[in-house]
Amino acid sequence: MTAPNMSKHLTQTAMVTALIIVLGFFPGIPVGIIPVPIIIQNMGIFLAAELLGRKYGTVAVGLFLALAALGVPVLAGGRGGLATFVGPTGGYLVGYLLAPVVIGTLLNATHARSSANWWREWLIVTIGGIAFIDTVGAVWLALQSNLALPAALLSNLAFIPGDVLKASLAVVIARRVRAIIDFGVPV
Image (tube, rainbow, N blue to C red; front, top):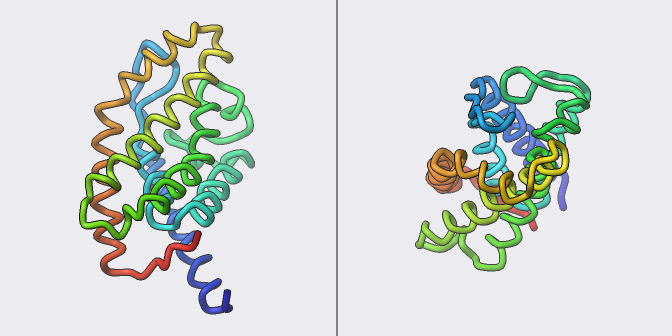
């Protein structure tokens, strides 16, 4: 990779990382039945995967999570620190880190980014993003809070309507941005 391309990818990665952080400015909405709030920040994770691909998308999310681990209040509601990684939301954060790999791999395998059928890209973001993150998060939640796994999985149904809306917005935004800016998504 040439130096200008590397600079371009690093700049775009930093911009998407900043976008994920900005989406965390919106406070979470408590669900009540579980100690995990509804947040808008996961839309940034979907955008990282769609715009940057699996490699740089994972780097962007990794930078974001590293800042959170260092105690910078970048998580929704101004949270940060290592305690968030071992608390009830820890599994969702691990899911965030792995989601760009899952989404990016599926998008590359199906050529959904270049497809005129937006629904294929939406389906991949929905399955690779929402289902994956919620499943990893529910498994951690079940282990961390001594909640039965079926109950933890069932509790994630509260997130589905909002997550489907966020996935839809992410696909629309990513398609518009890619039409304007050449992200040259690397594998």
